[in-house]
Image (tube, rainbow, N blue to C red; front, top):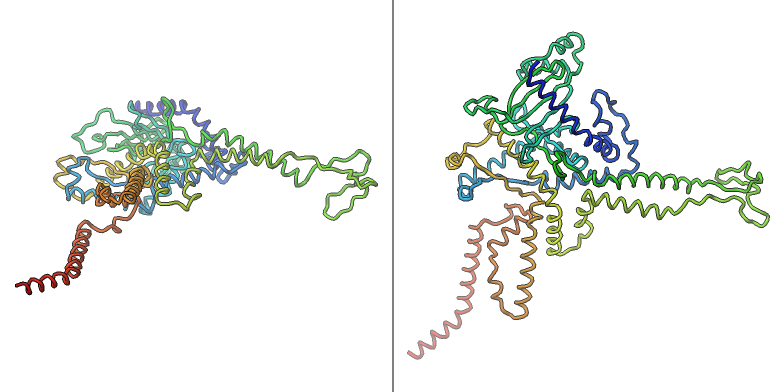
Length: 541
């Protein structure tokens, strides 16, 4: 037994116990919002029946549909698949203006997107799962690692498996993930050189039951003593341990320069490690809606197949509800019905109450916010910019956090992996002297929506200036606008492809040609008058 292994197992068990309340909360959400994960949070994967029905407590699917739309909206605003949603550049402004440095960072950005969206990397699907977990649980974790054949490999980590820890600054720096693995696969990892040993119990199982599974903990935490002179894992910032729970044995030891897990949280409470989600805020409305729908289904059934009320005189002994059947004695000699349907209540009022809860759920999942442009398509350019500005202001607090906690650490991890695999282009000398310091510039639709305030301000100011010029016939008010700066910035805010814009050299060439044509036209128009003057001067001479 190893003391390190014992400490890792002890820490995992403590963290697991501290998270019990969260898991109970997550289980309620699974049952009503994300049923494919229902019954997994507090059970081992080996105890589940694959394909088992898990929708028993989900009467209404409004929240589940809202979660899907929330995830799609997050992806569209933060990591759209058909756009470049970030770039990297030098931290120093003077260095960022250097042509060689600028070209190098452009190549790095191109390499990041090329490797990220390769089919083998599986980024798009896993990032969608991250957004689903974020909307459901408030915490979602992405694992970014090197692919065996080069490049990246992403995996949305099951929150049931992994526990996380934060440092004194609230930054994720520790994780403990418990998973099951068969004896045969454990031996394969030893054969591949990834692990150094396996416990005696696993060796015995290999002979009799190689498919038997054992619990393993993967712990990643800051290394206590980093030996910067060493090039192996002992010189890396984070220590990595694989520990077999049975036998308390260290299977393998390694390290990382950058933290391999990126945890995104929606919002957090004071001193809480895990985030709180839209589903948590909507849970009361979801429960009410489920109960309302149960009542409405019961009442609707009664309305379609009503309960009959009749006088106790034996008339309805042989009463039939079959279509076309005649029931003698169902009316009095005067024609008054002797059988009546039981009133079922006000179904319209019940539907209105359900619509109120559905509206609340959609608001919490931001569905209503993203329907603004869809519901009002006939808008002027100024109105569109105003809507975008409002959307950017409303989304910035929640979505902006995903860039700082999730995307930023992920991009740093990717660049580290590219460097380890020698996939980065040769670094310019000026950047080497600056020790490769870089920063991330986000160009996602969310960031453009936030910048829509600038574009909307320009449109409002221009409208005021044009109105003044039309009223006073004084065009000098337009001299205050630097259009050479404004229109390229507007193109960037509106996500216009750079290739659609003319280069500064082409713009200058067009202007020179236009000025030359204007000068020529002026000379042509002035020619008759000049000829008259010359003739008059000749006569006078």
